[in-house]
Amino acid sequence: MLLRPTCHRLHSKTARARLRSLVELGLGKRSFEQGCCAVWTRMGTPTNFVFPVKNLQDDHIRLVPFDARAHAYPFYEGISRTRGAAFAHFSSGPYASADDFNERFVKQRSYADKRMCTYAILTSPEDEGGVGDLVGMVSLTNADAEDRRADIGLLHVVPKAQGLGIGTTACRMLLRHGMDSHEHGGLGLARMEWRASTANEASIGLARRLGFREVGVIRYERLLRDGVARGKIGNGRPPPPGTTDGDLWRDVVVYEMTWDEWQQAHRH
Image (tube, rainbow, N blue to C red):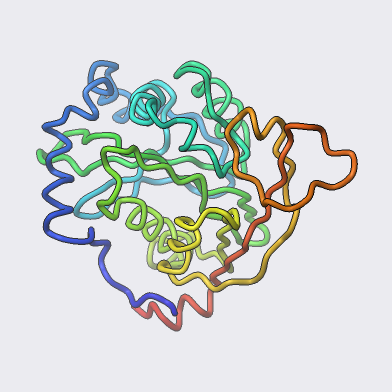
């Protein structure tokens, strides 16, 4: 079932109140200490993404290009207690330190891949000109300008901000940005895709809530090197011959949204 066009609302008044309370928790304090206001003003985030990049915002959260200087350390601190579990369903991670995350994920992966753009998820500031607190990240991946497609993935919401609908809101904002026409400020994509490990029930549930249509399952989609040691969750199937002890394999379920499905359910 495709979602009707609505503004990006968090789940409840209680959730919105909890989101406002994140400021009091000081979740984004270090980002201020590192001078991220100046970074965002300069928009100095390096990107060679194949599509135009812009900030996205609703009443409660903002998505801005992930900045290694401003966002990597507060994000890592936000997931530090559960960083193993945070990456259990992904091929990347976990990371040994904030510097390791900054170098291997932000710089060597996100910045280096022109098909990928990672966004920091921030609470909308109470005061005009404020910054807001960092509560997660999400990416557009496998983007192709000629085929007019992209995937939504690598969603992480820090534990203190989970259960507030932030992940759903952020992904819905990216979905709308991708599928809306150029005339309405979007990228005008022909299709967007969502891939989730078959063991990742939360990701599968989110894809369905966003209105993605299931295409099918790809078995043995990816080899997870040293998956056991890295805390990965595999497909539970017998490994193919030649698989090294300690390696795991992943199955993924693929979902898609096409331009005509989007237009049918989201007429302006």
